[in-house]
Length: 153
Figure 1 (cartoon, one colour):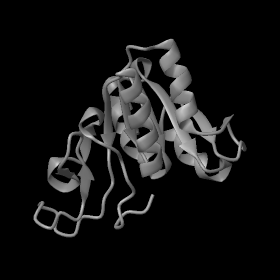
Figure 2 (figure 1 turned 120 degrees about the horizontal axis):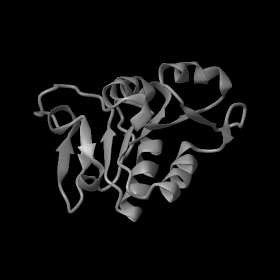
Figure 3 (figure 1 turned 180 degrees about the vertical axis):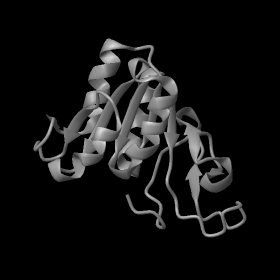
């Protein structure tokens, strides 16, 4: 399994890595800069990308994902982080037909699906509600991942 995280989205991946076992996971984490990478210590064997190049790979974590999928085309991807990163992961996995699970963030005004304030576009039309249908989705279900007004990425 490939775990792809960014920012505060790395926290749930630490729990997933514990459940799967560190030996069964490849961990790829993206951060803006070196001072924000301290949380990487929560995960065993994490490879880091930083936007400014101050730690690890200079660039986006999705670049590390592309390289990893070249080595292991049969992987399953689990990802949590900012909307822009999740959209990159979704698009990469869709293009290569790699199964992926994405944990989304959204402002949830009601928390039980009535207000539709946390919707995400569904592939083929319609919407899914993050609060009741998620927050974890099969990436193939999603048309795209946008930043929600209530939860800036």
